[in-house]
Image (cartoon, rainbow, N blue to C red):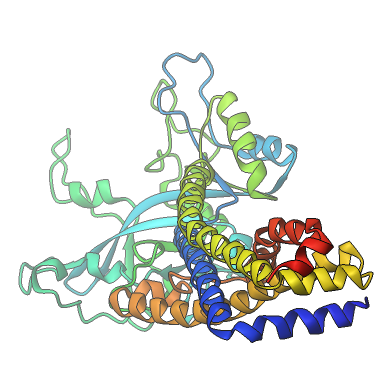
Length: 450
């Protein structure tokens, strides 16, 4: 018997008993929809979690800091150019960016504000996902320029004591960081000590104020959104070092270590190194290698891997719950096919007497079971997409973050094909034993059966 004949016979036999077939297909629909929706919830939660982690920073980046306690070590661990060259020579390292942090006081009229300065190489700014509201990011400047985060103005207050700060009034000061002249004082110790007599009884002079040009300002995020760059003021690290050396000359730069005699080092040491790794799988080994060297190395990889394992368990549980429904549907298919064999015993006997191959008889019943799985799988997938859309709309209404992260339910292409193949396979497995029973029926006994 030809394959097309078997296909035609199996499909026509199913629709001879419409009510039973529809009820059996309905069980497969519920089973497929359950397992797809459950797995999609696990995938959606995992994707939303990863998107949230990525918003906090790169998942393939290791931050290197000086060890917390150097008292037990004879050699003081510093972050310098020698260490950068050593890390660049390690395997899987793509780039290393130094960061120099310091503080300064910004002044505009009667307003003052503390600036958390971060000096970074120009190449690093190209990798940052900073949304520029006005101007541009630091780079290609002949002198020191500042790029202000969107929340820097919240740290400004009225030094005359009138009007209060943003945290008291909820109103930002009337300052245009792009256009207004912002004066910066780097030597804050001298600024607060000015006007008071020193050890010799002489009144200390206030430090020099520097007019620093603004190259750009970060775009303000939404009302309920948060920016990891908002509280900082960014600048080119080379220009910052040049300016600090000129301002402090032979004095110690704030934030820099001093020798045992209290004198400043000639070399500038960095506060942090940002190491970019080629893939997430190599982050933890590199982090361990840097820790073994005596430095304090951190990354999000360990935390993310732990969370991914947890999400994997959640996906397995959700998938298992859906699989129970599909298992119940498989029992329904087996019952339907067994009833079909009892009702068609005489037909099977006639086919055997006429010389029909036993494999064709088995294939006929397997195809019928496969048809039930296929039809139920297709309808179940359609129902799954409808439920997924409804779930995402409800979740987006309850949580705006879910609307931007792709939703709580995510059905990838591979899940569509896998669930459809799985439904067909479940149907055929459920029909295997009834098909074997049909093949083993005695032709004479089947013909005599009424």
